[in-house]
Picture 1 (cartoon, helix red, strand yellow):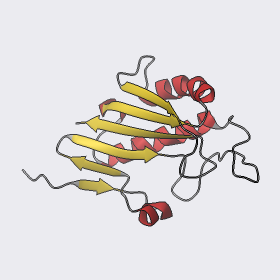
Picture 2 (cartoon, one colour):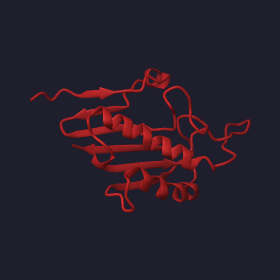
Picture 3 (cartoon, one colour):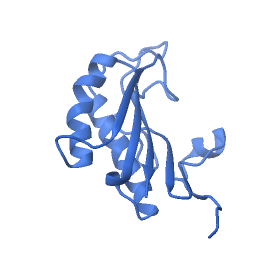
Picture 4 (cartoon, one colour):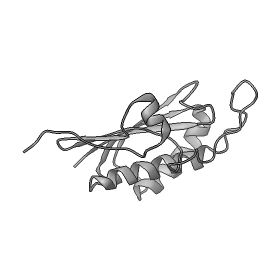
Length: 143
């Protein structure tokens, strides 16, 4: 049995620019880099920002989180896994109140149950990779 890592990426410019892969499988564990709201070409539901790059409205939090979970599901599927295999997630949000309001419904939808069987941590942060991002979600899955 080989212990070689298997990796997956989306081919977005920031993967090469920063230098990373979106997902790595080692043994029975799949590690996903923080997933942000993009569709492989552009940001999805970017938050409006003012001239200094500060977010002026957090109402796109739910739509951004949905895309984060959709991207995670796509990556997991490439390894023959699904959201049912996720054991841990960490949500990074710009606004904890908006994150709390959006995350519950989005997570329940993404995991397909009212009581997702996954450990979860939410962390408030002042900035993510792009000024228009409101959320980023990192996942670990076991298969």
